[in-house]
Length: 414
Ligand SMILES: [Zn+2]
Image (cartoon, rainbow, N blue to C red; front, side, top):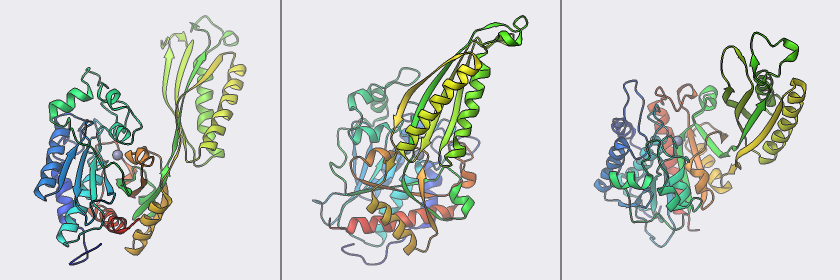
C-alpha cells in the first residue's frame, strides 16, 4: 500500500449478502443455479455486478467476448495491474458458489480497500470471464482463452449453442458485446474458487494453495467384435465387444493402483446394436485421464494402449485407442503460489498445497501472467450440483486471503 488510513478488512456481512443477492439470478427451486452463459440470468447477474462497480466509482470495460473488467485505480496507472476474478456463468443444474464466489469476493476486496481508504500502488482489476463452464457453448474457459490469445476471437464469437444461437449474437442481445479491451499486461493474477473436491473439508483445513492444474488426456477406445443372436451363438463362438470393453474399463480403473495421483475415468459407453437379445458387436468408450505430470500421463497412456491390445487379443476382438484431447498440466507461478502460502500463514489459517483436478480460467491466464489460485472448502466436496454449499466463515477466510494477497501484490514495484 502507498497510503492507508486503517488496515483493510473484509466485511463478512456484506460479502454474504452480495453472494445471496446475486444467487437470485438463475436460482432453482432446489437451491442451486441455472445461469448458462449469456442467457437472461447471466445478463441479470452481470448487470448486478456492473451496477455495484459503478456505484463504487470503479471503471468498467467490456471486451468483444463480453469479459467484464472492473478497475480500481492505483497510485501509478502506468504500472501493470493485479488481476482478480472468476466467472458468473453456471452449469444448468449448478451451484451458487462455483465461479460466483471468486467474482463477488473480488468485488468485496475492492470495497474493503475503499472502506480503509487504501490507495494501492498498482491498479486492481476484477474480471468476470465469459463462458467458463462450457455448458452452453463449447469449449469451456472461452473468454479467458481469447483474452490470453489462446483462441481466435472471431471463431469464438461464431460458436453456437444447441439451438444455433451464436456467442456473438447472444452478447449483442444481452448488451455485452463490448468494444473495450482488458489490460494489455498483468502483474499477477489471483483467482479465488471453491475446491470442488473433498480434501480441505476432510482434513479440516482453511485454505488450498493451488500450485497448478492437472493435465487432461482424453482417449476414445473403439472395440469391434461380432454381433449375433443372443440365443443361438454358443459361448465359444462369441466375439462380444462389450465383454472386452468391460475388461478395458476395469483396466482403466486399476491404473490408479500404481499411480495414486492419477484420475482415470471411463465416463461414456456406447454399445451397438444395444439390444437385449443381440451380442454387442461394437463398443465405444470415452476415457478421461488426469495427472499433475505430463510424463506420467504419457507413460500411463502407453501402458493402457498395450493393455487394450492384450485384452483385445485375449477376447478375440479388435480395439483402437485414439487420443482426442491433450491438455498439458499447468504450473502456477512460483512467486504467486508463495505469496498465497505466506499470506494464509500470516493470517493464521491452516493450509495445504493442492493441484486442481478441474480446469479454471487461470489455466489460460498462466500463459500471459504470473497466475495463482486460492481454494476454500465446499460442503462434502460437492460441486456442479444444486446442493453445492459453503459456510459463511469459509467465504470470509478465502476473501481475507485474497484481500491481503492483493494488497501485497499491488504494492510490488516490480
Ligand atoms: Zn468455476
